[in-house]
Image 1: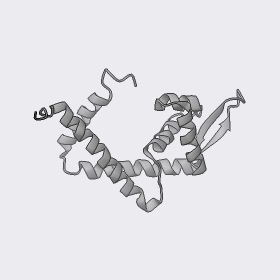
Image 2: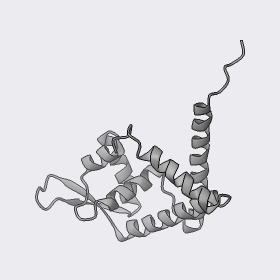
Image 3: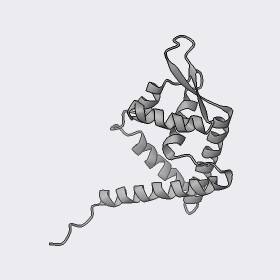
Image 4: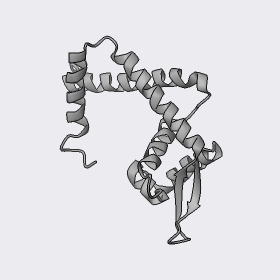
Length: 151
């Protein structure tokens, strides 16, 4: 019995996965000369920590934002701390609470990661006209901010 025809949704799903992989490869190429080797999860932790500028996040805050178990955050933070990108600091109001803050190295790394992401996106989007980019941006915003996503 022949396999069923792929649906539009399954084709789109495959295209999204392939595009994501292409984006990661392009970003990695743009970072190669900087000797920066952060996983996508570590990069996301840096972005989240940066988002909390005024009050560094607790490990529990990171776990919640990443939607992972606290142990997974500990492993990510350990690696980032070993690279000098973040440091653990005691909460001034509650010494039992540990907060995570970016170091100067972490801020510099985050700038490089953002620059590489923009360059990778520019490379991937190069074949599109300005109008096509605007349409794609609107479509992606609809998908990212859609009603089914609580974030």
